[in-house]
Image 1 (cartoon, helix red, strand yellow):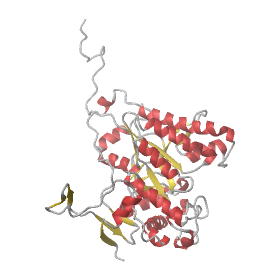
Image 2: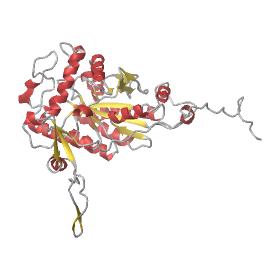
Image 3: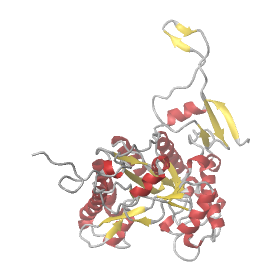
Length: 420
């Protein structure tokens, strides 16, 4: 099959519309008037360009992806919040579809880091050749045909709603003995290529040849990632930079404005207050869990509500510290899971509902945040990076970002005389 095929929208796009959003209409060669077809030049026919085996397709610019605008002189930055999901896939918990719904209800978009092996059926597992491991190895298993179909549906809908589809790679190998922290740049490139390939060939690998394609070119859509267990960042960033990625979110930062590393925006998760403790906590459900119930994913049920509230309140304290301070983007990472009775999922529902509807707040994907950062004056971003955690500019935002000196306060030398 040729690398790219063109087909009229009537066949594939109609299928995609039926499987994705209501109200889709295919192009026609004439307009229907009250008394029949209107004569004149035919309307242009919409076209979907299938890629490879038709697992993906180019369908045009992504809907609901805002055009970034540069801050005006003296303008207060918006408060960005990024909610992101590691190993995104739809299973019996239906958390992917749940958080899509929560996002739409709260004017938010998110980033879903898809695990490539979630697009590969178990019987085809040997197609995966993980670095430093035998073919078909995976710490998180593979999927079945129904699970792949359910995940494809959610990925398709998520992208059409303006969300981003990143990658969490494949086998999720952590620790010593072949973990991602030991991988070379070349091995990372192999892992990335395979993560792309499983998304680009899910139809062939499942036999679902007549299913609707994913509506994007994954080679172009994929611009960022988070490494398993936050390991292997150094060599991953080198590989990703050479492959044209635009950001990485595999580290731990304070709540300050981001900078680039190896040409990629470092959009790592951050440390926020941990209620009841004198140390700070990473903005991820797994880390809250480990510091509450240890390695047990189902600890004391009597503490579930308290643990969820603790995570919610820590994230809200981190949000408020930035919102009322330096306005640094808040980056939050999570998993579709039911740890400790699902209390962390409940906490995130409440955080999203609380913060995403506030004035000047934009709950966005990493793609949108990277677009905005790229659109800014580098000198303005450098000045924003001089603000510490929770630090609002003392002269006020207008003076801080105006490029002009702040006026002298009244009653000091140089200030205008005060009329009596």
